[in-house]
Image (cartoon, rainbow, N blue to C red; front, side):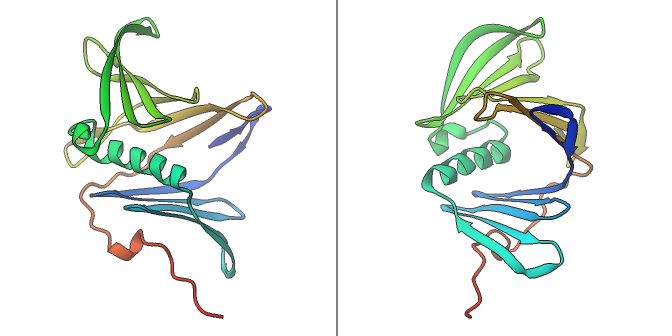
Length: 198
């Protein structure tokens, strides 16, 4: 659910499917009423495709820029490795000290994936629960609820806030209905779609 920054009562709803696979693959499919948008990462290749529902002749496809690919790689690593062994993949972790989030004592840790790609995370000092994630551009990510799959606890809802070019706050809420673990996807699921000759 995406809220209109100018009027939070106006919302756009969509169905979202997100898949991650080691070593570094990700694919997000968003089904809007009048558009299907796919964004995928396959190692160091990234692409985005938009298509009209029910009409495969109406589509647009682009390759992602190096900066977009770096950000997707960072997001993929963090989702696949659950904050463990990230240093082995070139991520720098740095303790930033104590902080309070919603009145709860937290420890702030920065995860730096490279220039301009930093996630600051606030963990509850008593329980280790993730309270808040901030991005280097001022966005925020909060998790709530819980779903368990494959013996792993996942948040049921993720709320992301960011600033628009006009300085308004944009809010996107994802509520997970189903999570599966260790599903195997074929290599072609993530690879750049081959364009048919004309």
